[in-house]
Image (cartoon, rainbow, N blue to C red):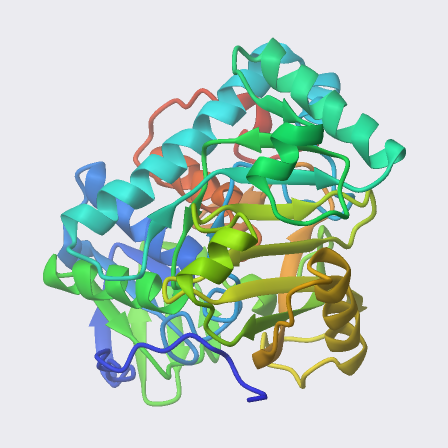
Amino acid sequence: MKRRVFWKNPGYRIGRPVKGIHKTEYLIVGAGITGLMLAHFLLKRGIKGSDITIVEAGVVAGGSTGRSAGILIPEIETETNVGWDTFVVRYGLSLAKKYRRAYRQALNAVEELIEEGGISCEAHTGDFLILARDDEAKERVKSDIRARRLMGERPQGLRGVQLAREFGSPGFIFAERDVEALSVNPLMLAQGIADHLRRQSVRIFEHSPLDSTYGHTARFANGAISFKKIIYARGVGENHRLLHKYVTTIVVTERLKKEELEELKLADLDLFIDEEGTRSFHYGKVTGDGRLLFGYGDVRVRVHSAKTELHSAHLANIKRFIKTMFPKTPLKVAYAWSGAYAIGCKLTAIIEFKKHEVVVNGAGIQLGSIAAAEYVATKLVGKKHPLDPLWEPGSYAK
């Protein structure tokens, strides 16, 4: 077993660090998926690429984004692990529909960007399954189905023979199927977006940790950048009272043959979550080269970096989970790694507007982060947005 991240992108050329004096309109601090998509949305709203600069302390996607599972699913990822039913109760049906629409638009934006930028990132779509192994989990999944139907959608509940045909594990009694899900190599996606942005004259400096800011000037070890607006999209590197940080662990198995995937009912490239009702949950997918990826995490930490040692207890937990899910199929772990990520203790990403500063922080590569980036881009150009009741400038989401 290799104790390192599975994702690779050997064709990517790392950008130079900040050196000398520069000037920009919009300075984005952080080149994870949130910061990169924010630059993309600014371009879409008419901002010139030469007026946008991104600075990254390490390399593009070197933090939580590049250590994630590369699963883009329409789920609310929060510290309390709630679903759309909770969102409907908290904010009402009308706003829930708008927020759900923002998730779909975020997914569409990524798919369109992959095509527009010619980004090779092992992208494939598949059904997304929320799995329940006991009656308590089954009722939570059913509640989520009812909420989505209220929002005008048609999620499908699976049980018995239907579930057995869809997912080749005997450990579950019920599931919800949603057809909106995208699997990617997150490192190749993010670095592909970076290259696409550079072709549109967006400057991206790497290995450039921010030393300090004074007024409208950001200072670095060997240079400075003056700006009109600075947007912090630093992920786990951000310190904020509404953000907590956790460690998750991901494993990737050895490659499976096509007939093995068919036996496990995963040849159609499903993505899945095991609904457990706590902050922690198991999740997984099929990678682009026919391996199974599983993840799990539940340890809260105080860190400033996504990089961390492999969590042995998580690894043991995932191995037990794999055996429980697929008892008749021996699956050998080929890669294993852990990573830290920031997650909001509210129902949405954290967005804070100040005079010339903005903080935006979501959760890894989830669609909520991308929806938040789209919202910030819209407000930076002075436009109204359907989600203003969630993120009015000067306030936090409830």
